[in-house]
Length: 141
Image 1 (tube, rainbow, N blue to C red):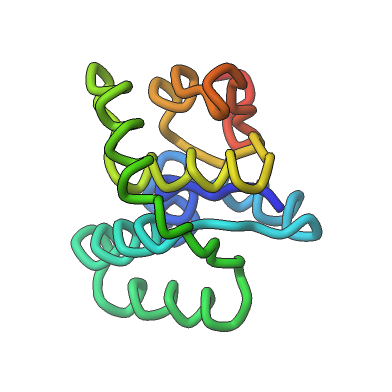
Image 2 (image 1 turned 135 degrees about the horizontal axis):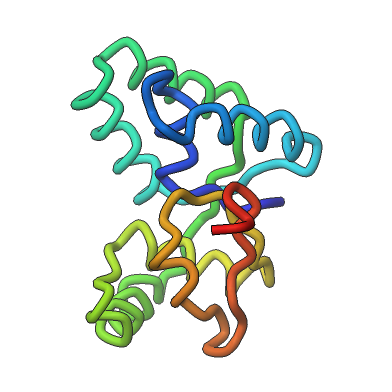
């Protein structure tokens, strides 16, 4: 399973997004391996698609999730504490809850491959404190 950040889903659902073509290629290429995301990411995507594209695309996105477009990782009970620690550690970027949830998922799933348009942050974040993410959406930055 490959981690999927908000920017990937938003680009996939918005034809006017500058990363739309890259997201389509990545979705096709990596779909056989499956995607995993978190509820904070889904919340962010739903909100941003609604604001940028409209209600139809936001609803269509949630239907695709319901139909199995990705697995929704169940955050552990201690996730709020871990998220607070991560957000404090990366306060200079700064890190939001959605990004913290993906870092927690990476640590729990032992998976550092991600699809993200957020180059600066995911180049700086380290899962399990030392491991860099491998951004499959924009591998050359």
